[in-house]
Image (cartoon, rainbow, N blue to C red; front, top):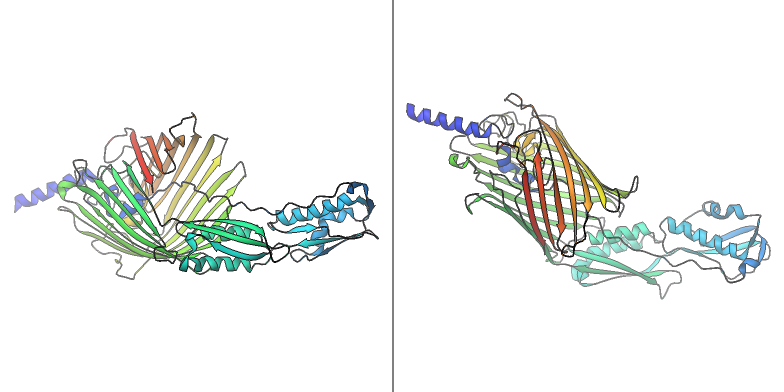
Length: 574
């Protein structure tokens, strides 16, 4: 019996020695955060944005009428301008365009110029089909009559394979809203086209043509095509020694296979052991998105599962982890344009994480969370052309659906509160410096009102996030902040075997705070790294990357050194 107790004690001390270095945890025998099954999904997510933008929507109205030859020789004193059929603007609004001409001597060419300037006012305000014309008339007393042809849509036709059967129902709802707006405005047409393009697998474009039945109106044809299946696969070494350095990730989307503009998505990840093909990480998820109504609202549901069998010394203690998640969410766009997008979301999710080993007590977290989020992205030219993305989310833990209770003996962190309240935010901006150079700056942070369980902690580290010289979730804590600066040089040398590529250099930094740290020096921890890399588009569907990242301010915990990290990745879309 005594020998058994001594053996168990030595085993515990050995495990503690392995894991006390990696991260700040509540107690020395907990699983390192980079090997935590509850953080797998967050570690696989990309923190830094890729700044994809919608394709431009090209919309043009008719060119203004030009003055007839010799009209500059016909002059008179302008007494008044009478505008007919104007409903969008008041007479005083329009008079601001030509008011300075009243009482002055003008030519007939100036009359056409006034009509062109009025047309330009409508066009500048987004009324792309509206035109002010000079009707046939006799100008006897100096009073000029102009007619405003406020462009409306007579007929809207939706064509193409992506708008057949019940697929057309929600598209027709979007179109009906557009037609009900009356005088066509660029913003309304742009919003409608963008919302149609937001549907799963859809590519839509529009064609405007003069109406054959209504004078001054236009017919709109929307051509809709849909890709039924799309997806991607990726190979990279973005993992860790605990859960496999090399990863294979893949996913696919089934777009409207049931004919209701729904998307069904599946993702999977596999990371083998450094000694063979036995998995140290397995992850899979399934999600569905369904658009409802005519305002761009979508309903989303998802489930996911991860299994971990950490190596790199932890395998001898038979550490096993698993995590289950499921949730529902409502997404609502508020503003949808090419230049500005604003949206909100409300979701309820549940996560159950279990960890056990031969020398550690069983750990189990059941967290039910309500999340309210907002997103904004916009294009501006404050300094030069730039894109900015920002996200804000407030999360609250709820005591429902079998959630753990504060003080439960088997929590991942003894002081962790399942009914937590926290706020997370991130912002990023990509600014064009010159035709070849751009600057990307990004930051994220989190604040919590109490100690958190492992899955809800703020983490830094990982090849696709902040702290690229370190492992995923190298440091975790209740509160944290991180930032990154990256300078990009697009295609510095011409090459025929790549569609495009960019060379970049970066510096990132981050800090976390732990409310319940029990180890000296772990209440506040920070890291920083720098590096260089290349991102390449081999063709329209194949991408590759190479990066060297150097830890600057601390050793990589599981390696015990600050040697440079070399990352490679290869992905293919289909």
